[in-house]
Length: 358
Length: 235
Image (cartoon, rainbow over the protein chains, first blue to last red):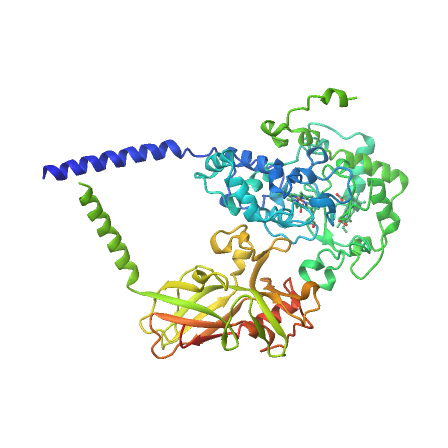
């Protein structure tokens, strides 16, 4: 009897002790509320399955800037998605990948991804969490394997700490890695342009901008629909396929000939900083794009009915349209420190940096 | 003191086992090439007289079900299994029997369409398993890969990655098999890899050395391999 009591006592002590330790180790991550800008539709990303947390976002941000996610260390996500270019590749029609390769498409800008249901120019990827797997494993991008990336992350104590902080334990697997990347990507919300301030009544357009906005609503908004500046449909704007790339766009995914040469309507937010343009980056400037709409549309069976005669635009109208498109630049977004490389990852300047400065 | 603890532990684990072992039922998938056992690195000849040296053979099975003589099917759980020629443990699926006298089994070769659209899965469905198309989201439901002198593809490789879950391109196929009168607690389901090449459609290595996306060829291969299963007498 006495012995039983003794055992009971010891067991109780162990139970109490272990629950105390458990409470110590598992501190819950801090939930981050996802703000929906006024007047915007509901996001489509399933936040319930991957709630935003401070720790998850921080982990995703580190992964986004970490070269170790690529085979030779040189091609982090951020090498092709640069913040100052609204996370597109600055000044490159096609981006550079592993071992002197090139991507076959223009790197799109990244923002407002919570409202997007499918990804890539052809919409081939059906969930944001799955998107990073494509560049990660493509031989002309990061050229890695999932297993090898996970191995590198697991070998790093500081990553183990961050995964624990974000997900409750140190398990590092494909899902968690992708969910963390998504968490960071989801925070890239761009809704602070002059256009947005005008909508909220805290700024006003000047005359050319106002005239440009009217033209835009008349001639462009059926595809580049506000407030996201895309309706997420796939359209052929009359671009014949480049003969070296032979990119059939949406048809590659659906195999329907009616989808030949159709590409996802891109958002025009931040368009002033995302040159070059088009799925293969064939247009170097907004002027080139507008020139195309005015006189370059090639009619094939799938050319969009809205564009079969081109879009009539006078030189005046082009100037006004451009004035309006420039109001879509969100300079706070492209300089927001929360989206930049984490301070801990910035390499110290080389000792002779001063000599290269000028 | 210590002895008592161990006793307690032993008792607990025994209880757990007793609860489990009662109705355990093993489905063993046995890879075959016609009547021979399929071995990686070995060469076989398909119905068109084409040689094939197999390097990989794997497929997903899901929606496992069982029925008695009344043909009312009962689910054997929500799991999806990846049966892989290169991994013997993957070929033995341990289940809880759901009917007293099983007469039929039914399963899907493929992955439920929902799992193809709900982001990154874990376990057998982890994209790290290499059975997932990253550029056109969706699982590769079955893979047969090797080399053949009949293949005009680089290196004489032939690769059949069959998948597709969208309407009109769905490569999931349901297979129903009748069990022998006394099935026992271990059934062997043979999977004849050479059935990729005949059945509902004629597919030759010479004409089609590669399948790497959903679509017409994937559908034909799926129709063919849906017929590759049969209950084998022995392991």
